[in-house]
Length: 195
Image (cartoon, rainbow, N blue to C red):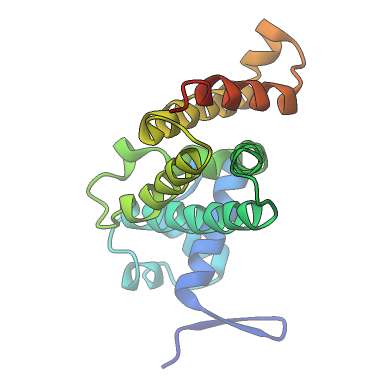
């Protein structure tokens, strides 16, 4: 028997459809709205169908998070391809990262909930570590003395900005900030210690 769900004229593997339905539920109601039965109901399949692909709730959440990392990675690859200058590439990556966090707020939150996803059977490091290494390589190309330290500083600060923007905390403290200018200053600040 084929594990597929028929949607209009498209045939989609059931595992992919379940992840997509999980993402829709995540967008609508947050992490608490995503359960195996809820996803099955949303996909229009029996309540036991998701267990063939996701033996636990954590496994389902981790698969949804992995789909987010795949999408973010694709966006960052596009950003890198659009520029040749390493500093401009870092700026593009920073903007895409913040844009992804704003556009996919609950997915972004889930992707970095390693405390929630631990023990899921999905090694999310295989998705997140290459992103970090890409930033470190760009920092090295831009002349950073210690590219891994620069990459970690940039990532933690950008992640903080993304999180604070999601909760509107930045608006309370700093008002409406110029994101382009802020990102440029942030990158320049960390690259000043170039070798």
